[in-house]
Length: 144
Image (cartoon, rainbow, N blue to C red; front, side, top):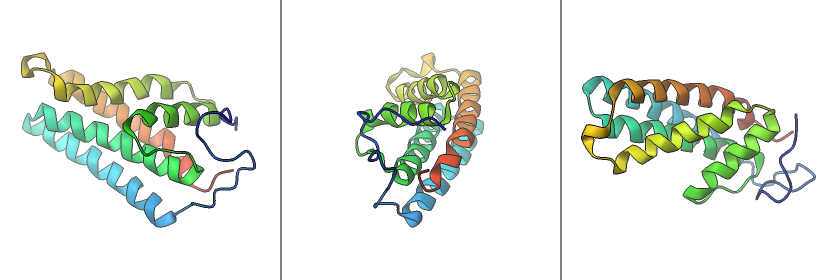
């Protein structure tokens, strides 16, 4: 696997993560999956705002699991992109760049007027978040 650049608020260059917390990682990982399930349920119910926010939450919480496992900083909303960029470099998987944008779009739906929301698009976006979770999950183990 490739390593993200050292200046990206990530783990020390020796790969040691003294803050590895398997309990927190499992909580973030399982909550992430729960948020995605709830997002799909909200979509079925027609609550597009909640469906979108749960999709965003699913992505954000899996990113928290990855950051905790890898020793990368993620304590602010704006660090979501840094974590996803680090993950993309670590895995050598460019799909994460586009999936990151989709997750951010779901979060942005909260600020849109309802007539601008589209259930079909939100459904596709939730499926994309499921793909993002699957790609990220292997990074929730100890840093290599």
